[in-house]
Image (spheres, rainbow, N blue to C red):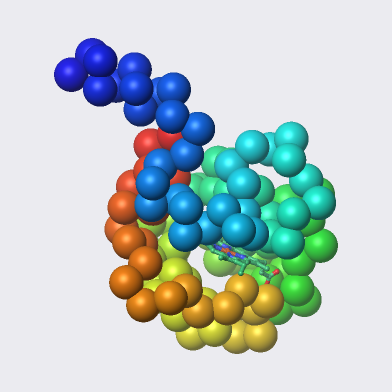
Amino acid sequence: MMVAALLLAAAPVAPAFQYCVSCHSVDPAETGLPAPSLDGVVGRTAGSRSDFDYSPAMRAAGAKGLVWTRETLKAFLANPEGVVPGTAMQRLPPGTPVDEVIDWLARR
Ligand code: HEC
C-alpha cells in the first residue's frame, strides 16, 4: 500500500493521461502548449487560466458559471461540443478511459 502510494506520487502522469498529453500538461510551468494546463482543473472555472488563449466559447462558458467538477468533466470529455458549443477541443477517440483520467486529475 505504502509502496503503491509512493510509486503513484512519483509517477509524472497516469497511463490514462497519455490520451491528453499530446495537447495538455499538468505542470503549471509548462506553457505554450496547444491546450491549457490541467493542473488543479477539478474545482476550477472553465476558461479561467490567464496563461492560455481560450476560444471565445470556453471563456463565455466560464463567465456563465461553468465549473469543472467530476460531473461536468465527464460530460465535456464524452462530448466537448455538447457542453461548450464552439470549443476548440475536439472529441476524444472512442475508448478513452475518461473515468480513470478524471479520478487521477481529482486525486493529484
Ligand atoms: C488534440 C488536442 C487535445 C487533446 C488530445 C485533449 N484536449 Fe482538452 N483541450 C484542448 C484545447 C485546444 C482546449 C481549449 C478549448 C477552448 O479554448 O475552447 C482544451 C480544453 C480542455 C479543458 C478545459 C480546461 C479549462 O481550463 O477550462 C479540459 C478540462 C480538457 N481540455 C480536458 C482534457 C482531457 C482530460 C483530455 C484527455 C482525456 C484532453 N483534454 C485531451 C485540446 C485537447
